[in-house]
Image 1 (spheres, helix red, strand yellow):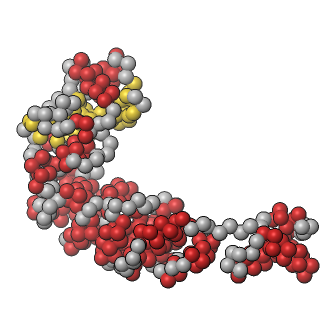
Image 2 (cartoon, helix red, strand yellow; image 1 turned 180 degrees about the vertical axis):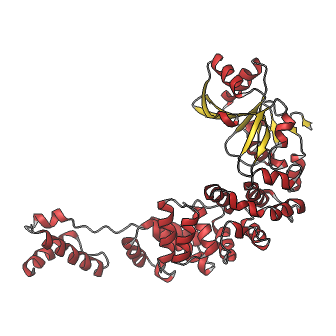
Image 3 (cartoon, rainbow, N blue to C red; image 1 turned 180 degrees about the horizontal axis):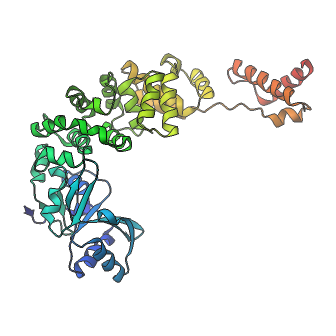
Length: 411
């Protein structure tokens, strides 16, 4: 199905210099079209992510055309038909039309083709198989536009076959259902996901983590996780989620808020793990060292909402940990207690704005007071820090150094 002048291309691009690529390919007998997520999101009227482009030129033909026209190319996935084209310091990924020759549930052997419908047929969902040219003409081979309007998320052709080509498509189905779906999931798609769920075990945890984190950010993530769990799908990649209500509560609070590591917060809220489970999840999902440290620290903190109720106690927690931890543990306490806190967001921002206490005395200050022995320096610093903490951070540097002189006499 072709819809003439159906899409406002300005929704897709901000830099019109990109159109130079369209002219280059056209002069060499080919066609370039936008495809996938950017087109889908533009049709839905929302801001999309990275641009994906498709062409009926082979990778070698595309490279040759760009080289002759003075466009720089980068080999970022020639084996799979993807060429990077540099325009105005921006990298555009252009993939040649393909058809699958052989699939094993994780990877596919492909051949290049010049048939647009054949390329569309190998994509996963109808809403992801819509193309658009530079004039806004839209090419929709599998009624993806109609499905998008109805909130129907379904596979192209045989749902089971599409999944068997790459089992990650099970998770992608639920992610896009959570983002665009209306009503109950498509029955054929859900049945195929259940039937093929064993295939999830063949996927790398890196791919699962990336897809799961994207899912956690989608609008209906809590309801979707419930569907996955009730149908025995979640258990093939994760333990049982026992705190979906907690996840849904904090997600509603943070939905439109800018919070660092939001996906990590959502996963923690979903499981409310103790130290052992936090370690297990971090290892299982191959968290980075930084992610694991955060995840486990939240599980072992022991800090309560009551301790985060005034500036002084907040500063003490900050000094023992850091400001970032203090703000993070506030969010996790809210999720754990499912407590509707008045001015919740203001309190979060207040914590982030609270100055982090800094012990004003350094070793060199002690040395300047005539204390040279290393053991004595360490002893004096520890004693002064204890005094400073007991004073609730009120003792000044001069007062502490005066105490250092007295401590030196004692030692």
